[in-house]
Image 1 (cartoon, rainbow, N blue to C red):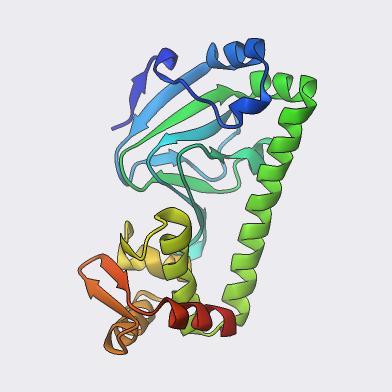
Image 2: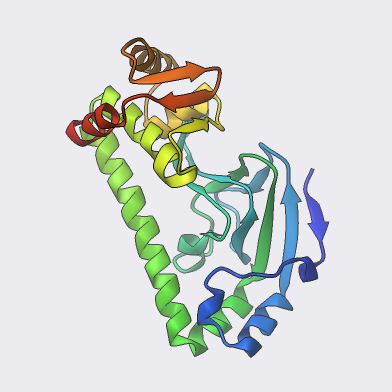
Length: 227
């Protein structure tokens, strides 16, 4: 169950280096920090936008809800990243959902206060635009990859995503169920499991439950690049 904490418990804002001291104080005075357990819904698609949110700790799954309960996982947000910025500056309605992957804490900033600082601080607005651009390009590249790559290339992309971006390690634990991993790769659960088993049998990776050890990063990167 979500738990609420006093905003004073939060000490660092994303992009805080771009803010003036009085702007930091202004935003912190209007931050509410809420804790969520794994799998809890943080943000619902099609609900009104009222706050800008950021991840204080933990991992957050950002996903688009589709028909027949099929979801498309857009990305995983980590500590220090905003969630919901695209919706906050484009429509009055959230265009995707967000759920806690593990235990997380989320900071909520009132949208009007956030926009007020944006309007006064050019350096901060440039940083926000940069963040939005990176997020958009990342999602764009993922969509292109899923449209043009064969299944081994898409599974390699998933492995690289966790290895290089989320955990920065050749050994890591999948934080998702096999169904969620399949949603991340844009395939079925059965196809994902089969291809992952092929990677294991070919000694490209070793697999112990949810723990992955990359045995040949060269092959993984080649599969990703060639698709």
